[in-house]
Length: 132
Image (cartoon, rainbow, N blue to C red):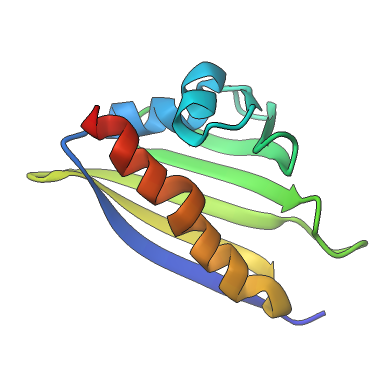
Protein backbone atom coordinates (compact mmCIF):
# COMPACT_ATOMS: atom_id res chain seq x y z
CA UNK A 1 0.00 0.00 0.00
CA UNK A 2 1.31 3.41 -0.95
CA UNK A 3 1.60 5.92 1.92
CA UNK A 4 2.36 9.60 2.19
CA UNK A 5 3.02 12.30 4.79
CA UNK A 6 0.86 15.23 5.84
CA UNK A 7 2.57 18.41 7.04
CA UNK A 8 0.73 21.43 8.42
CA UNK A 9 1.57 24.58 10.34
CA UNK A 10 -1.29 26.52 11.92
CA UNK A 11 -1.63 29.26 14.51
CA UNK A 12 -4.21 29.12 17.28
CA UNK A 13 -4.61 32.76 18.39
CA UNK A 14 -4.61 33.87 22.02
CA UNK A 15 -3.53 30.53 23.48
CA UNK A 16 -0.50 29.08 25.18
CA UNK A 17 1.15 25.83 24.15
CA UNK A 18 0.09 24.40 27.52
CA UNK A 19 -3.58 25.15 26.76
CA UNK A 20 -3.35 23.49 23.36
CA UNK A 21 -1.50 20.50 24.83
CA UNK A 22 -4.17 20.07 27.50
CA UNK A 23 -6.97 20.44 24.95
CA UNK A 24 -5.52 17.57 22.96
CA UNK A 25 -4.72 15.28 25.91
CA UNK A 26 -7.52 15.90 28.43
CA UNK A 27 -10.65 13.82 27.80
CA UNK A 28 -13.12 16.41 29.07
CA UNK A 29 -11.53 19.35 27.23
CA UNK A 30 -11.02 17.35 24.04
CA UNK A 31 -14.69 16.32 24.11
CA UNK A 32 -15.77 19.95 24.63
CA UNK A 33 -13.45 21.14 21.87
CA UNK A 34 -14.63 18.67 19.23
CA UNK A 35 -18.20 18.04 20.36
CA UNK A 36 -17.56 14.29 20.17
CA UNK A 37 -16.66 11.87 22.96
CA UNK A 38 -12.96 11.35 23.67
CA UNK A 39 -11.20 9.20 26.26
CA UNK A 40 -7.54 10.08 26.42
CA UNK A 41 -4.66 9.01 28.60
CA UNK A 42 -2.06 11.71 29.15
CA UNK A 43 0.65 9.13 29.83
CA UNK A 44 3.33 7.69 27.56
CA UNK A 45 2.05 4.34 26.33
CA UNK A 46 -1.50 5.31 27.24
CA UNK A 47 -4.35 4.62 24.87
CA UNK A 48 -6.86 7.10 23.51
CA UNK A 49 -9.99 7.29 21.43
CA UNK A 50 -11.55 10.40 19.92
CA UNK A 51 -14.48 11.36 17.76
CA UNK A 52 -16.80 8.78 19.31
CA UNK A 53 -14.28 6.01 18.65
CA UNK A 54 -13.49 6.95 15.04
CA UNK A 55 -9.83 7.62 16.00
CA UNK A 56 -7.81 5.36 18.29
CA UNK A 57 -4.20 4.98 19.21
CA UNK A 58 -1.56 5.38 21.87
CA UNK A 59 0.86 8.04 23.08
CA UNK A 60 4.48 7.39 22.15
CA UNK A 61 6.18 10.56 23.44
CA UNK A 62 4.88 13.45 25.53
CA UNK A 63 6.60 16.68 26.53
CA UNK A 64 4.22 18.85 28.57
CA UNK A 65 3.27 21.93 26.59
CA UNK A 66 5.77 21.21 23.82
CA UNK A 67 5.33 17.94 21.93
CA UNK A 68 2.92 15.06 21.39
CA UNK A 69 3.81 11.95 19.40
CA UNK A 70 1.10 9.38 18.84
CA UNK A 71 0.39 6.28 16.85
CA UNK A 72 -3.15 6.35 15.44
CA UNK A 73 -5.65 4.79 13.10
CA UNK A 74 -9.27 5.44 12.20
CA UNK A 75 -12.18 3.06 11.75
CA UNK A 76 -11.69 3.62 8.00
CA UNK A 77 -8.01 2.62 8.12
CA UNK A 78 -7.09 -0.12 5.63
CA UNK A 79 -6.97 -3.58 7.20
CA UNK A 80 -3.42 -4.79 7.92
CA UNK A 81 -2.00 -1.29 7.39
CA UNK A 82 0.46 0.06 9.94
CA UNK A 83 -0.76 2.96 12.10
CA UNK A 84 0.22 6.48 11.23
CA UNK A 85 2.65 8.39 13.41
CA UNK A 86 1.50 11.88 14.37
CA UNK A 87 3.97 14.42 15.74
CA UNK A 88 2.61 17.71 17.05
CA UNK A 89 5.08 20.41 18.10
CA UNK A 90 3.80 23.45 19.99
CA UNK A 91 5.63 26.77 19.92
CA UNK A 92 4.69 29.97 21.75
CA UNK A 93 4.52 32.94 19.41
CA UNK A 94 3.32 36.50 19.83
CA UNK A 95 -0.10 35.72 18.31
CA UNK A 96 -0.69 32.54 20.37
CA UNK A 97 0.50 29.01 19.67
CA UNK A 98 2.03 27.71 16.47
CA UNK A 99 1.23 24.06 15.83
CA UNK A 100 3.46 22.05 13.52
CA UNK A 101 1.89 18.74 12.56
CA UNK A 102 3.59 15.84 10.83
CA UNK A 103 1.49 12.74 10.12
CA UNK A 104 3.51 9.93 8.57
CA UNK A 105 2.40 6.64 7.02
CA UNK A 106 -0.97 7.94 5.82
CA UNK A 107 -2.67 5.81 3.14
CA UNK A 108 -2.08 7.85 -0.02
CA UNK A 109 -5.60 7.31 -1.33
CA UNK A 110 -7.06 8.93 1.82
CA UNK A 111 -4.42 11.62 2.42
CA UNK A 112 -6.46 14.55 1.07
CA UNK A 113 -9.38 13.71 3.37
CA UNK A 114 -7.16 13.29 6.43
CA UNK A 115 -5.30 16.51 5.62
CA UNK A 116 -8.56 18.45 5.41
CA UNK A 117 -9.88 16.64 8.47
CA UNK A 118 -7.20 18.17 10.67
CA UNK A 119 -8.42 21.63 9.65
CA UNK A 120 -12.15 20.88 9.82
CA UNK A 121 -12.22 18.75 12.96
CA UNK A 122 -9.33 20.12 15.02
CA UNK A 123 -7.83 23.47 14.07
CA UNK A 124 -11.04 25.39 13.22
CA UNK A 125 -12.90 24.07 16.29
CA UNK A 126 -9.86 24.85 18.43
CA UNK A 127 -9.82 28.49 17.27
CA UNK A 128 -13.55 28.78 18.12
CA UNK A 129 -13.07 27.00 21.46
CA UNK A 130 -10.37 29.39 22.63
CA UNK A 131 -12.21 32.49 21.40
CA UNK A 132 -14.91 31.87 24.04
